[in-house]
Length: 279
Image (cartoon, rainbow, N blue to C red; front, top):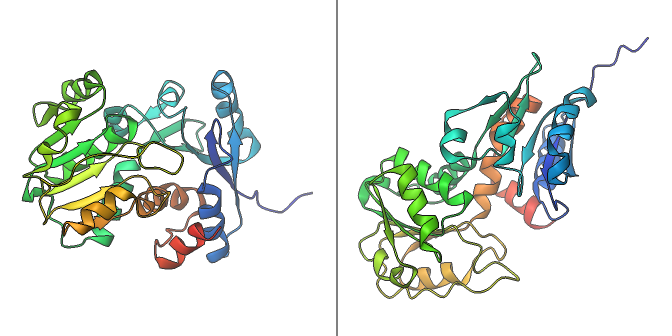
């Protein structure tokens, strides 16, 4: 007879996944709060995604995070999709419910906003338009979050204009599309500037955008967090802007899932940042 309660399992699905810092983060929180549970990286090829996801609850998993390249495909597998995940067109957090249903949500926007609120508490979303570089999956979450927070207009530029036009079609006339060559000028009257591209990441091509026209009072943030202070942020800071690095978004987006899976709302503080950075 086994009287021991089942230890909850969670993890992150991706392909590849060995680079993910999510296991470091969740492992730190499990130790910090003295909770029983495990969080593991799971490398799943796209063709195996549906079979793996439907098998995980029977193995004791209470939920998982989902990352590239599965964030869009997972919506076709989930039984319940939140409104924000449907709007963004991707999910990053799954909850395996007691009734057997798979619940899909997207917490990227929550993480993005919580990071800005924590590190730039004086920021006012309604103070002016926001300029966004890039038009990928992360950009969709950022646009949805900014519009919900009261940003009056989004200036959007992507290296391939049709992708930006597709976002305008989805989010409406508050999104104004600029050519990539106009990216510098579109920042001039903006109160918020966001890089959602991978440009400037370690091992990637640099983000070469002239910031001479940027508003010195703007809040500038970069979703890239390797390096922690990108060249883009360094240039913005030199022009008097308030800057926020991208690590906090990773940390804050993980909070809702961890709380639901393990029953404890974790705190995102300097100790958490250092635990992830030093690993």
